Length: 461
Ligand code: NAD
Image (tube, rainbow, N blue to C red):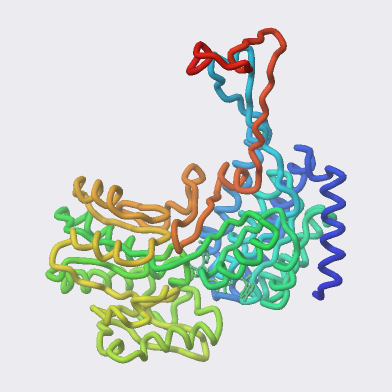
């Protein structure tokens, strides 16, 4: 896609928006129904594309992407008119008789740039919000999931209004051309590095942005005296690390903090749960996605090759380059200044960092950039309170991992270097809307205290 084509596309979208094509509830509903039909009729092709790009099993794809999209679509279609309706706000008695309301209006022509690890979820969930809010949209999926990107570019125009919703596939060059345009909103999912590029491009036009970024999401495992709780916690940690896209997930567990005396038993139990979930021969499992491409495989390999890191591997470490597969790998106390511990891992490697006392985890986390998500496995109410009060992160989940991503009633988004802005459920509608303040006055009453000439009586009336 070249500059001239993008400019032509922008003209078409602006014209559709100017003609108020995207404004009516009926138009929005028709698009959402189109997306539902696409998910239903093309499910097999969607699973095939995810298998091709990421080796993702259909069950995992449904749990992490397609099922979540269904939930999002159903909620949005059921709530559309309610979300679009003006919301009355209270007015102080002094303004009587006056009424005030917030009227949601679309932002205009918006750009969605998405990532490759959940190529359907991270493209279509923001799209649902953008359409529900009445915008014209360009979606650029990630070039790193080419089968999924091709699917979206081929099928979205067949199911949705192609005069107002466009998919423009492509890589960095296309993204740069798109970022040179004037948008009314940019919704970006990806790395902090590219987030900075997006934000500076947006600044030229004072375009608002949502940045859904990543970072290192810590998990804390406290002492759990009841053995069934403890076993469930270990299973959830294993699943929260290796479950979503083989650890290539922004909300996946990056590293685990635990008191040092618990490590020997913990390692035995992690191995038991790994075996239960992924079998005896992890390199042959069909239940784990593979690394997205050679570049990321090499990046992960390099993390293990750093000085002092390989010696800390206490489980796994096998690499199958032709099949882009890395065995679930656990490292005990790798150097804290290694890239493994300073950069987001985004892969199936789990560093375990030991502490003398679990309370030290608060300082450990606070000494690093604010995470997108934090997971704390504990029944200690005072630790829970401390974590909520004394750390900052996009979300905190107690006694599970990843599940917060599936809740429409909790906004999803980061803080600090993990991004800003939020979406999911009604928050997606709000992310693509401007809540316009509308105030209606009456001519019935008129007080003189607001007008000159001033006198002492009018001061602080
Ligand atoms: P990325 O930043 O490399 O790419 C994201 C998008 O930006 C893609 O569409 C890509 O084409 C585009 N892009 C890449 N380089 C660009 C450039 N120089 N100029 C303009 N556009 C460019 O990220 P990724 O590899 O797709 O994803 C991994 C990162 O995304 C991780 O940090 C991860 O934590 C984060 N992530 C966040 C979420 C979330 O919801 N918060 C979800 C998934 C991934």
